[in-house]
Amino acid sequence: SIAQEVDIRTGLVEWEWHGLGHIPLAQSDVTPKTSPVFDAYHFNSLQSLPGGRVLISARDTSAIYDVAQAGGRILWRLGGKASTFRMSRGARFHFQHDARMLSGNRISLFDDEAGPPIYAPSSRGLILALDLRRHRATVARQYHRPGRSPAESEGSFQSLPDGGAFVGFGATPWMSQFSPSGRLVFDAALPVDDG
Image 1 (tube, rainbow, N blue to C red):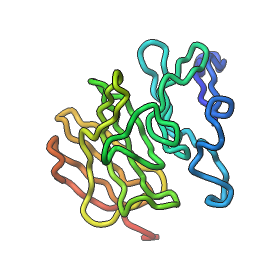
Image 2 (cartoon, rainbow, N blue to C red):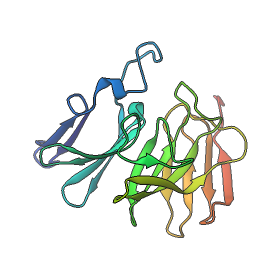
Image 3 (cartoon, one colour):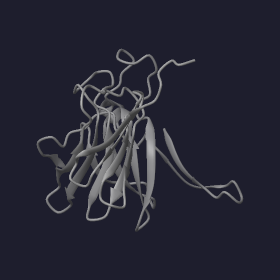
Image 4 (cartoon, rainbow, N blue to C red):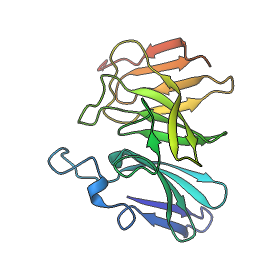
């Protein structure tokens, strides 16, 4: 996986960062034995951060990286096999998508939990509070829909202006809106094989 910043006007690559060379292959949760396609990192979201940093979500390491653009050094890792943060109860996530840094040192993500292997019966939306001084991650809020909805891929999490969240459950047909308190206020499914 390679992350790039491209000048749209000229088409020139202004910054590039490779997973290989920065993240050991042994930190991947995916192997040729567990996946038909060996993709050790699988970058699936990037976010520019203040101070010349980039937040990179690597699905197949089950980790999120804060990377300094100057020099490409990993400043911290959240999750995975070499987390800089101690993950409190319920904070561990697997095969995540759509990681976004929020205000107040919080981070939102869609937690697939289903790879394979499957780590939980259902996927969820998740907001973690990061204590950058003590290097600890705790659950600030999690969003589960009723019933089983394990997404093996994809998934999205959108923070809403009222403090609630909208969660797309990836490869499953479900999408759900939650109130600021975490109560389910809307739940719908796309048609499956309706053609």
